Image (cartoon, rainbow, N blue to C red; front, side, top):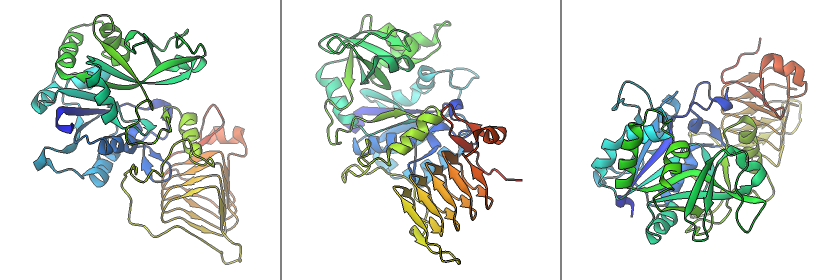
Length: 406
C-alpha cells in the first residue's frame, strides 16, 4: 500500500491566530498535551497507517519544526525508499513562496512524478485527531473515486468556519461550499452538516493535471477548498469519507480539532483532563509518537517549610518537580519547577517554566523558559493582564516564550 501512495503534509501556515505561541515557531510545531507537538498526531497517523513516503511542506519559522522532525521522526530507512522529509518552498515555478495549499503541491510536482505513486494523500499538519488513513485509501479504491474528501459531522451553526460538502445518497459530492453563511444540512439530519477536514486523496494523474490548470489561472487563489474542489465536483467523481465510519485499526473516538485559535487550542488541551477524554491517547496499538528529552521522572516533594506538593486532575511530563506548590486541572510540560505555596489552576505550562513561591496562575498559557517571580499573579485581573500580555476572547492569558518580568 505505502509504495503506491505519496503523502504531503502541509505545514507552512503562519498560524497568526495562535500568536504569540507562533511568534517563534510554526503552528504545527506548537507544543500540545504535555509532551507532543501538534504535527505528531498527523505523523503518527501516517506511521500506523503504513505510509512511508512523507513530505512535510514547510515555510514560516520552520527551524523548531525541522529540529523536531530530525530528533523525533528520523525513523525510516531511505535505502528502502522510506522517508519523512521537510521540503521548504524551492521556487520551482517562480520567485515566490507557497501561495496556497494547491500551489504548495504544484511546486513539488517533480517530487511526485519521481515517486511513481498511484495515489496522493494530502494532509494538514495542524489538526489534532487519530485516523487510519489506510481505511480511507481502501474506500477511495473501492468506490473508484477520482478524489476522496475526509469529512466529519458538525452542527449547522458551527459549519461556517469550514468547507461544507453536499453529498448524494451514494456519498458522491455534488457541491462544495467554502465557509458558507447558510450551510446545506445532511438530508436526514437537518441540524447537522458534513464539514471537510482538509484531508484529500487524489489519483496522481488527475491531481497533476488539475494543478497545472490551476497554476495557469491567474484569478485562482490556488487553494484546494476555494478553487480545486468546487471545480472538480462538477465533472469528476468526488467521494465523501466520514471520520469513524470505517475506523480501521484505530478506536472510534471521532475526535478532530482544528486548533487554529488560542481558545480552541486551550480547550483541546483541557479536553485531555476530562474523566473520559474524548481523544484516546491510551490505545496500546496506536501510541502517539514524539521526541522526548532525557529527563528524570516527575515528582512532588515537600519544601523547606514542610508544605507538601500536590497535583489534582493534571498532566505532568517528565522532569516536573512540585516542591510545596499546588497544581489543579492543568497541563505541565517537561522540566517545570513549582515552588512553595504557588497555585496553578486551569493552565498550560510549556517546558522550562519556573514558578516562584506564592505565585498564583489561572486560566493562562505560559510559553517556554519563563520564570514567574514569587508572588506574581496571572489570570486574576484581566484588565491588568491585557496591559502586559495577549488575552484570548475567552479570557485566557498567554505569556510569550522567554518573557522576562521586570
